[in-house]
Length: 128
Image 1 (cartoon, rainbow, N blue to C red):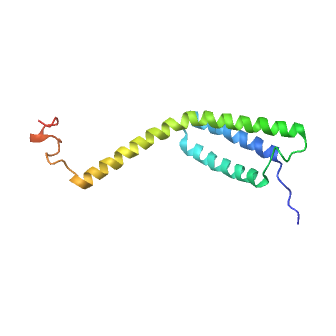
Image 2: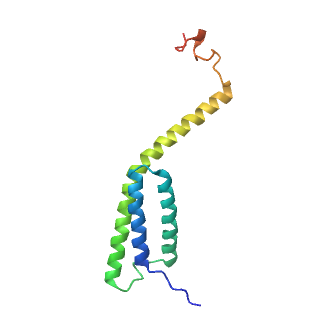
Image 3: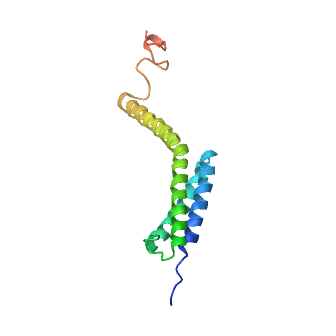
């Protein structure tokens, strides 16, 4: 049985459409939907990778040019998505690192400060 090979141009167009949707999700800070769309993109990219050598193996110059345009558009969309996601991820990393540090300090020194609930000596919050 001979399975039909998916059309790489259609796959690239579908991938570009997913990236456009992901950009809108990133702008809207819809991280759950963005993660789901990202998983869909992984599947599309893996499908394209199985075909391999898309542009080099395309005898039609017009199709090769269209593929190059689509790939360029996808890369540009990816860069725009990163402009929105990288700052959010960095903020999350800092928040998590602070929580890990706090947990380590509490584990090392106990859940409460030796100076009581207020955190400072003699029950004041400034340590005096």
